[in-house]
Length: 620
Image (cartoon, rainbow, N blue to C red; front, side, top):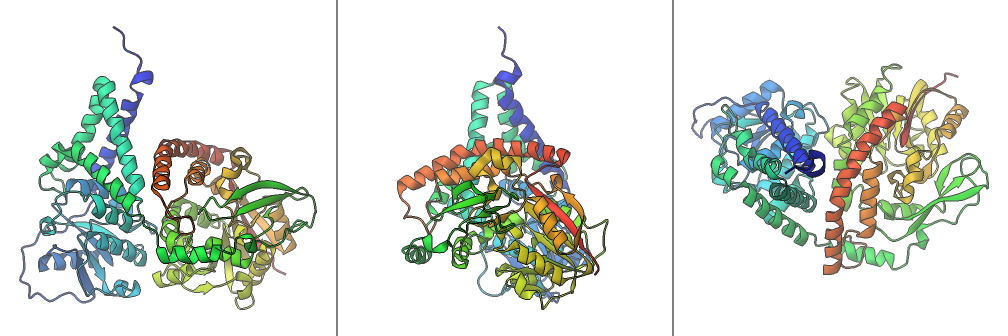
């Protein structure tokens, strides 16, 4: 009897084995990188507390004064201002989950890494707590609340946050012998900025794949399932492991059943946890009663860039970002190729469609996305390396200041200031990500800031503005003679724009007002006395074409049923949304793989979905 070849029958098992094997090795390597505090004998409760430090613990966790003193000494010696303490008996699934999220060897050096911890004890300096607006007194937080606090204080100690195992700290008294389930798990995931419903669905899909492989693909399938089963013991049971979970053998033996039960309970709890904000929904209903036509200006007959009347419709789309009511048109100029929203939104319309995207309801998600663009931020900062060593840098459209925070690794002696319309720029100043925050329209600050900066950057900013040429005029005023202007924009000439049509993410309607071809930008800069020094396409590519298309399409088919600007959710709309999201998971995985290939091709061919330009202001 012959067996079908591996590529036709056992490929699923082979892929699962490879993924699980890589995950197991990675977790073991990260586990070994966890620092361990010295073991010291317990001390009396009368030992004085070191000045300037607070140890915050979750309910049920009692830390001996010796643990506190040792942690303070370690943190001060390492130059840390935040230190999350891991109990040595941390439950197996909690430990594995943390090791999936955190690479201890890189955690401190990654200024954009989100604050992660075990949720049992965190040591924080009083100045960080004060700047973060956290009052350490009052009732003890639960695990989810402490996880959220750890995430927050990391933003105020971006390069001074670490983790360490505290052998004298135990989580046994906290009533947590394993991974949380149901509502508690949902609360913990949300506190870490993770989507509980999507993660539960992904876990269920993974368990189904393992079960199917074990049943249908013989020894290969059984080996993959066995590797998943034994993973906790393989990672945490090795001699010398800094974490020794209590009941590791029992937790390993029960893993398949407990994982399935936990995923099901988390999925159910996530489905019940989506109740909309009734006050916000009522406010949106009142605002939408007058319709959305008032948010659009009259259509203009000519191109705002060159004045030509040779216009044609490039794409018509609804709001695919949030699913708010309205339909939007992008037109292309047949003379210069400029693409612009026509009719464009009024200022009131912009306020309506931006609301709850970068702040409010969607603010946390937007911040998470921006925090994962570290490589892009570094590439933007490094573009200037051959040309200048700036002392002053103004980032226009800085948002929450993520670029300025990351760019300090490249330019540690540069003063970064930020300007933006939203409140996020004030938060960036409080966190220390920018030194000075300016809130408002850039042209309004031009006269006040005239000649003060050696560098002005506009990364994915001009496309959001109502008059990009006026923004370039402002940059020319703010820069000192010989200063540098660096810009990054979506490329409307990208091949993917034609291939994906309305589902091309960089159309980003209704927020993007203008998409200028690079030739147009070069001419506009020359008209204002700039010399273009460098131009990049492949390095500026954002690897989200296919993933974004799938996500936008799924959102269009089944919008979030709990969006406050939509109709009240029903069982049917919730079920449809859940079904579409579940069906989208394999499509998103395939899209991510395609984006990886697409990014490699873009870098090799210097062609992508965006471009960067660096220009110098010529001395008069």
